[in-house]
Image (cartoon, rainbow, N blue to C red; front, side, top):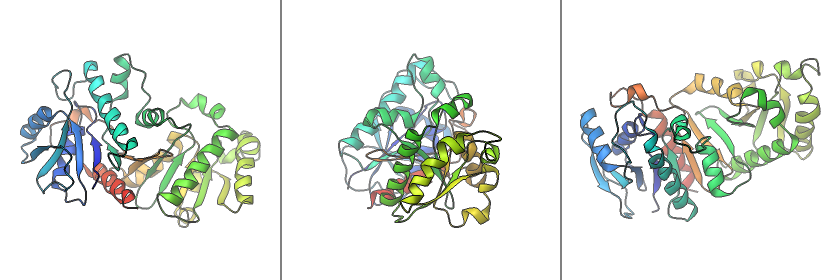
Length: 322
């Protein structure tokens, strides 16, 4: 029974808090948190919890209820709740490094990730765009796709963490082919959807309105979509994003492809914030994540909600069964 690893993320945020809640689960395989065990002990005291931390040493049985497997990674500096420290950037990246290395080398079934603070990692002089890009580079794959999902909606992104002014230039026919190929492949292989039905957002308002509001749909997006439709893929042409997300349109869709981050994700998060999960498609291993940030002001208060992490762990374990 290979383990699932969970990165605890930014130590000054709520990552350690929500990871401690995993002790209340009863899973079918080991779930192991990557964190400084002394920091977790301190957080247990601050939160008034009763959790037994067990150093992970290759156990193949799941932990007992009330226990949490931990693989120790030492902090560079002691943590002050809610206060970022660039000296702990290396600690955060070590979590990502180990989790990716274990997954690629067959020592785990994959990874679920708690939130990190991108800004403090960059403040440490380390170029860092996010989890998704880190795992892509580590796995040496040309393209990955960010997809968020709730129980009723999946939204994949053609572009991820780009300034809005850079998005049109980034949406090329080559990129769309890569993204759509990955989306279709992983919907079939990881989610077991034999004939996925995909709706596609246009880039411009009203999907360009026949070129009056932009020509990207005519010149770039729709020609690619027509190719897939000609091969029998159940895929729309580009649709106006302001009406695509109606219940009538979504009732038969397996996924939506949005052109940029804030086009599709606000809709998804408005439907299920705290219950959504982020999945990185295109990696040679399973990677899921929470749908929220580090919430520094909530660290150690007991007010942080762990539901998104539990959904992320649930989905990773479910995908690992096949």
